[in-house]
Length: 242
Image (cartoon, rainbow, N blue to C red; front, side):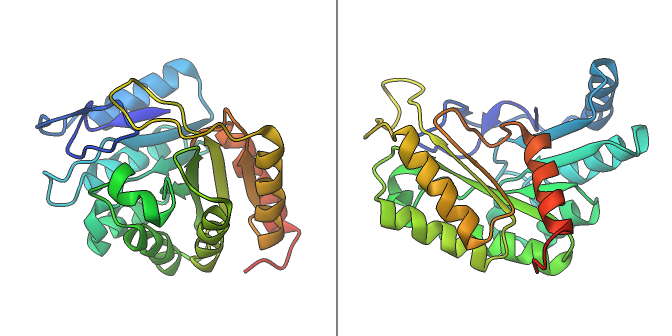
């Protein structure tokens, strides 16, 4: 997994340890430098994410697009999964990413709507759902993915409702993991979800029709990303999923 666009975020989510402030301008040679790193590491599948860049007109979408294309030029067989911010709901920004043809487009809803004001105060739940839905409308064959952290104070019925909302947005796969507090300054861990509960959520997600599910205490957005991608691809090829 690689993070684009620096290490300073323009948002201040209570679960995240990334520093908030005024970022530097995007580095023009960043896509090429990332390609060199991927070549040196002989990687076959990469995940590209970024800080939120609300200071940029397109939220950094052009940098995503340039990086995806650069990776495809360097290695036509490489898998490129992107974990993108919401671009403040900009369809034009999203189009820049989708047009570059990522292998998987991931955007995390992170938590249930009730907790957004505490956990993601500068984000909007419906905006995130709409982004995933629009990605499908731009490219019906694009695999989409989202994820939630559990243990922030959500209730079981709220988690199930979020999963249902994601399926209504045609989201293909989902990750569910335990939230761990980066420091005492961050949102507290309200509870630790048991392995049995994670297994129950996995069963519910699969019953809903998610083609790829990773659910467990140590699961994160890029957790075994290539394995989850292969699972989605296998299920998609052997089902009547639409």
